[in-house]
Amino acid sequence: MPKDMTARMQVVRAFVEMGGKVSMAAMRDEIGIDEPEDGEELLVVRSGE
Image 1 (cartoon, rainbow, N blue to C red):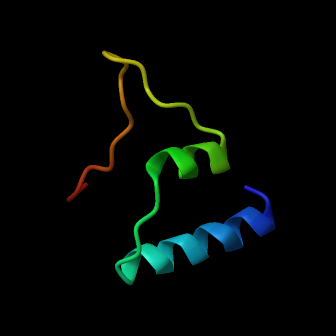
Image 2 (image 1 turned 135 degrees about the vertical axis):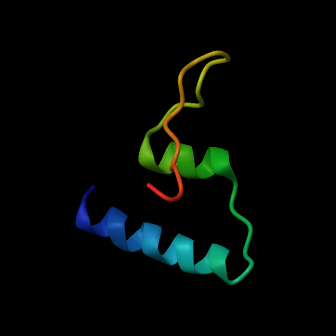
């Protein structure tokens, strides 16, 4: 991820942690990740591993 994008994501994260609301679609567009199709395998964070 380019340095300026990393900084932008840090700002967005801080904003959300303070209670701000950000559209998931807007963030997907920002980082270039498509909405998953129905039935597609998804990457998830697994706690405790």
